Amino acid sequence: MPLGVNISLSDPVVPAIFGGHASVFPVDALHKRYRQIRADSQAIFARLDIEDHGVQSMPEVSPPKWHLAHTSWFFETFVLRRYLAAYKRFDPGFEYLFNSYYNAVGRQYPRPRSGLLARPTLARVMEYRAYVDAAVDRLLENDAVAQDQNIEQILELGLHHEQQHQELLLTDIKYNFSINPMAPAYDSGLVQPESREPGPMAWIEHGGDPVSIGHEGAAFAFDNELPRHPVILTPFALARRPVTNGEYLEFIDDGGYAMAALWLSDGWAERQQQNWQGPLYWRRVESGWQEFTLGGMRPLDLRAPVSHISYYEADAYATWAGARLPREAEWEALAAREPVSGNLVQTGWLHPAAAPPATENRPVQLFGDVWEWTASAYAPYPGYRAAPGAFGEYNGKFMCNQMVLRGGSCVTPMGHIRASYRNFFYPRDRWQFSGLRLAKDLT
Image 1 (cartoon, rainbow, N blue to C red):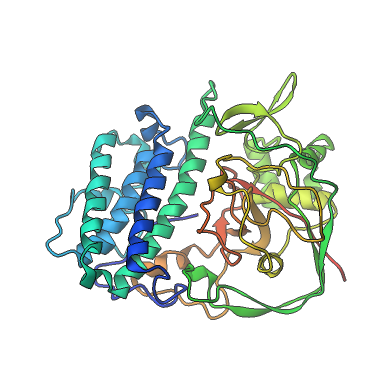
Image 2 (cartoon, rainbow, N blue to C red):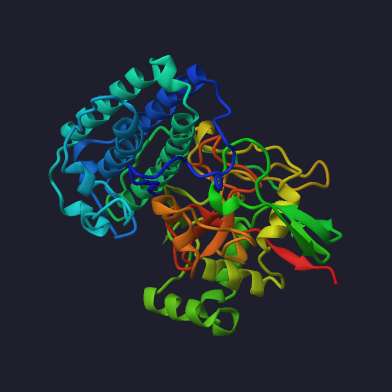
């Protein structure tokens, strides 16, 4: 997801168009959460060697040390420089280097060229991070300042922003490592998720009629989840679980990548240009199929959800299967009934796991494992308005030519995902943990 929440120093407060009007955490709990999330980021980096931190293997990924610096830049620019008296910037040049792409803040160094920068060194970036953390500690230890709801809201926004970067960091590391012929593991000790029989595809029916979608309540949400609004649904059915590797392999073996009739025109052109023959990290060897994972090369688990496919591939598979992709309102109508739990980053697997066997007629794996492509274009909800200044650049300016994904993945942090969360990528993108769940009409 495009990231980098930046507001100019003249912007008044975090706009009310973002969910919630203040942090739902008391100040001391918010301070503790700040420390924990910042520590979570550094735990991801702890497994990298210094040589890994400058690698940028394609324009869409960022070098690991850029993530470290950019997330610190957010807190320095929009919390410390506004609210901590006599705060002195760590390095004025960082404002240009680590601004992602927010024109209301100022000029930005081109992110696709970040991998060309040997300096600042990783050591310097880590000094920056420690400097910012110490200053945030001083700020939040001042009770009068810490009770300011504006500070709480910006901190809350910054923490969700950092959690987005934690997920991006893991997917970027995976791609960076995958292009190395030696197929190095980010963590060779990763526990393989249990391979279990998920059972045949089953369908959860919904009678249609009006439903309301979008965020509600006092908790934080991004502006693209608002406003909550009614949607009229016609009767439909949603698959109980995502499509598995084994099911997707049937599509490949049936010549799915050679049947132009199954593909959207842009998708067929992309498939030909990129010579796609299967999901991004699949490798065919003499003994069968293998898959590159954050734990290195491993045998393909045919029972686990297929991942790292583009929207074009997901749509072609759905057409081949005689079904379609769900619309995001259909997905949310069923997901809003379910608890937000699943194979998220806290399980430690960092890889999709097979669905549990069916015990009742309800959907599984709606949260975690793989982001699920929907048939919905990423567009504003009725009544949406972008905030003034740089906050309006957070989501609004990306509402064109991208598709919505729902549900989170195996590298999404718990506490960051919810039923109304709208992720978005270009239909060609494959380096995220993106999969699919089928839907069909009942009329």
